[in-house]
Amino acid sequence: MPQYAYRARDNTGKLQTGFIEAPRETEVASQLRERNLYIIDIKPASEKKRELSLTGAGGIFRKKVKIKELAVFCRQFATIIAAGIPILQALNILARQAESRRLRETITGVVEQLESGRTLAESLKRYRDVFPNIFISMIEAGEVGGVLDKALTRLADHFEKEHDIREKIKSAMTYPVLIICLAICAVTALLTFVLPKFIQMLNDMHVELPLPTRIIIAVSNFLQHSWYFALAGMLILALAFRKFTQTQQGILIIDRIKLKLPVFGKLTQKVIISRFCRTLSTLVHAGVPILTALEVVKKTCGNQVISNALTKAEESVREGLSIAEPLERSKVFPPMVTRMMAIGEDTGTLDILLERIAVFYERDVNDMVARLSSLLEPILIVFMGVIIGFIVISMLLPMFKVFSGAGIQ
Image (cartoon, rainbow, N blue to C red; front, side):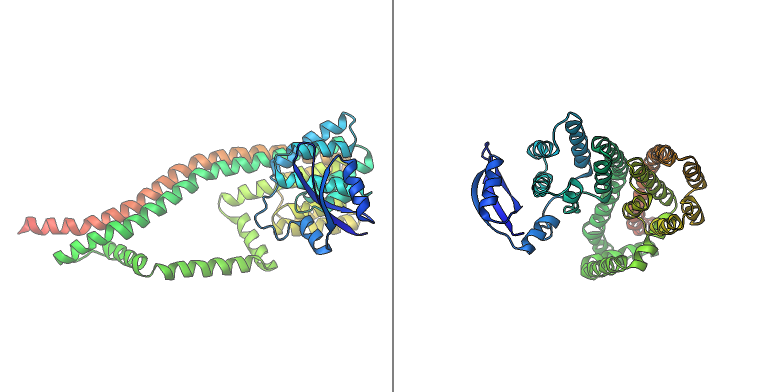
C-alpha cells in the first residue's frame, strides 16, 4: 500500500508530522480530518524515508527515550486502560502529554499503525529502537491473555527498578570520577606550567638532579614538546580497542574480564543476575513462552558470558530438560540462584522465586555500591595526594641539596 508523509496542525496549533499508509491521498486527508487535524501538506513518502523515520537512522542528534520515561509511560498507559478507555484514545492522550519529543513522535506513529489495522505488538515492533524486546514481548503476551493493564503495570515496576539501580551506580561513581579528573588537571598544570620554570632555575644553578627529579623532568618535557605523540597514541589505542570490542571474540574476552575484576567483577555479576532474574520473572509471570523469554533475557543481560550460558539453557529447554542445570554448569550463576530456579521449575513457581532472587540481589547491589562509594573516596584522595606529593618532593629535593651544600661551605 502506498505511504504518504503529512504535516498538519491540531486545535492548539501544534505541528504534527508522520506517515500514513492508504490507497489514495484523499483517504489520508480523510483520516487526518477525522483526527481533527488541519492539513498543511500531504505527499508520497519513499520506503527509504519511511524506514529512516521508523528506525531513527540518520538522526544522530535525536535523543533516546530514557528508561524512566518508559516507566512513566507504562504506568500511565496501564492506569488509563484500567479505567476502560480504548487503546487508541489512551495513546492519543499519552502522545499529547509526553514530555520527550522522541516518545511523542513514536506514540503518534504507533497510533497510525493501529489505525491501519495492526495489533499493538505489531505496531511496537516497528519502533525497536525505542521499545526494548522485553516491552514488546510483554505487550504481546498481555494482548493475547487480555491482561494488558497488568502487563503494563509489571513493566512499569521493572523499568523503575532498573532505573533505580542505574542511578545508584551513577551516583556512587560521580565523586570518584570527579576526583580523578581533578587529579589529572592538577598534575598536568604542575608538569606543564610550574615545573618548567623551576627546571630553568635549577639549570642556572648547575645542580646535580636526583633520580625522582629527572623522571619528573622527562615527563614534563614529553608533555610540553611531544604531547601530540601521546594524543595520537591514545587515539590509536582507543580505535584499536573499539575495533577489538566489536568482534565476537573481543566482546567475549572483555565481558570475561569484567566478571573477574577485583570488587567490580562481583558488583557487575550481581547487577546482571538481578537484571536477569527481574526480566525473566516479569516475562514468565506475563505468560510469555519460556523459550521466547530466554531469548529476550539473553539480548538484555548485557554480558556475552551470561548470554552463552543462556543459549545452553535454551538448548536444554528445547530438549525438555531443566533451565537450572546448564546455568549451574556455567559457573557464572551462584548456587543459590540455580537451586532456587530448580525448585521454581519443579513447583511451578519460577516467576515468584525469580522475583525474590531479584529483590535479594538488588538489595545486595545497593549495599555494595554504598560500601564501595565510601571506600573509593578516601582511597582516591590518598592516591591523588601521593602523586602530587611525589611531584612536589621531586621539585624540592634539588633545593635541599643546594641548601645543604651552602650550609657545609
